[in-house]
Amino acid sequence: MKTALASKSKQISISPDDPFVIIGERINPTRRKSLLESLAASKFDVALEDARKQIAAGAHVLDVNAGVPGGDEPNLLAGLTRAITSEFDVPLCFDSANPAALEAALAIYEGKALINSTTGESRMLEVVLPLAAKYRAAVIGVITDEQGIPATPQARLGVARKIVQRAADYGLPEQDIVIDCLALTVSADSNAGRITLDTMQLVRQELGLNLSLGASNVSFGLPDRKTINAAYLALGIARGLTAAITDPTIPELAGMIRACDLLMGHDEYAIRWIKAYRAAQKAAANA
Amino acid sequence: MKTALASKSKQISISPDDPFVIIGERINPTRRKSLLESLAASKFDVALEDARKQIAAGAHVLDVNAGVPGGDEPNLLAGLTRAITSEFDVPLCFDSANPAALEAALAIYEGKALINSTTGESRMLEVVLPLAAKYRAAVIGVITDEQGIPATPQARLGVARKIVQRAADYGLPEQDIVIDCLALTVSADSNAGRITLDTMQLVRQELGLNLSLGASNVSFGLPDRKTINAAYLALGIARGLTAAITDPTIPELAGMIRACDLLMGHDEYAIRWIKAYRAAQKAAANA
Image (cartoon, rainbow over all chains, first blue to last red; front, side):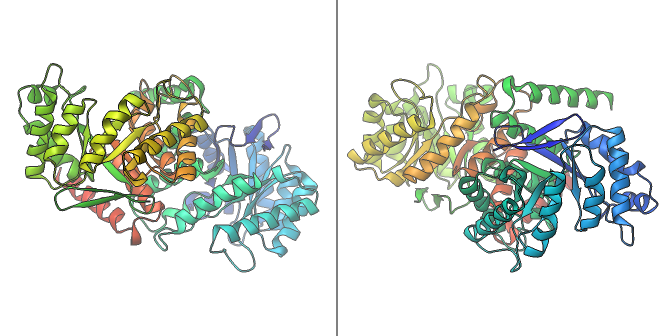
């Protein structure tokens, strides 16, 4: 099953038979002061620089979040979308809990976007799925519902099943649903990482859906987060993870994803691996 | 299923419910000139220093290979075993294709050793399995037979099945067989990594056996081998890999394994993770 995304002229396919899809996470003002301040002033220069850097570092899709406290989110998200698409030809992932903001961005976007996200809660599904259907976007479905996050992989599978069923009710095909199995913090619960991995395998096996992950939560509160996050990406990829919302400008994460592509058979003759190595060597020599 | 190994007083358990088992690979004169020269002169000082360093870096078991061209391997392997066990209380993995050398070491070893290795070839099984049974050792069974390495995971599973069946004929219980699914070089065949991962999952699922891996071949001929090897360990762990013959003195590999232990639920309260981080910080401050 392939999830297709597109910008004006570029297509991206998410599937186990394609290279891992990196959704660049940096255009998000939460915890990023310079981006927050520029967006609050309706300036997009910091965001555009983030876009440029992430694309150069290997991002296939850019997550775009315009959630500024007190800001006019629909207006900001649309402005951000216009600014990015006028400079870069890259599929976007609209990241908002505000339906009006999602619609403002989707309405002006040329291509097939990804919506980040709906949960399995009926009140979310009833708002996000019609939007996705109207603008023919794909949707990230996060495995949580009215009762919170189910404890077992089997119960989480039930939420994924509910999301695709409800999507079908709105005419959204299952390949347009990408499931996020939700990585909780391993420092709070040492089984959190494993349960999510087991859920990935189950959702992949039972429903055949593509999987994405917000890949940074798992290491929250621990030192050397990038090693933990890199390890979790590899563990996830072996269990069927096909995309992640992550920061490709962190060399350890981008390198791990490239290595996994190589080892999963998505880099014939190791061409990308060797090219990236040479580029890194050249950059180091020029530094 | 737990594979138990032991030195004089220390027990090690290989299983998916235990932390990943690191079998230190450094005591092997192939490609290591200083070790080769010292062993050729029947000196064990370099090997003992390798033992010390690997144990300090987290090795749970030490692979011991005394294959010196023109050397008296039975005598050397026994001498090496005596030297190591007189200084260190760590389970050993005897690494030889020479049955006389294996027997010389097994005969003087106090504990439960691991033999590295037999293949699925009848002429190997008929020699190695009786030795394992006689000395109550566990055995690494490498998935290759008279026809070479089977192309598909299903055919490789067949070799694993043959090895455990023949082991049973000699009275060796299945938990004493650890399967090596054999990681071939990904630069020669871009599907090599994936086929081995699929084999791991199948052997684990169908036979429930523990799995080890010589974790360095996969990156042969490519740059930045340690990143590839680290990624492959994580991918393997997600598919059921329970041990690897690797070099824990390479920080990237040891760090990746610790991160996987944490994420697979084998490091409660992240105690080992945090302890290793502090030790590394202290070492860096003292450097």
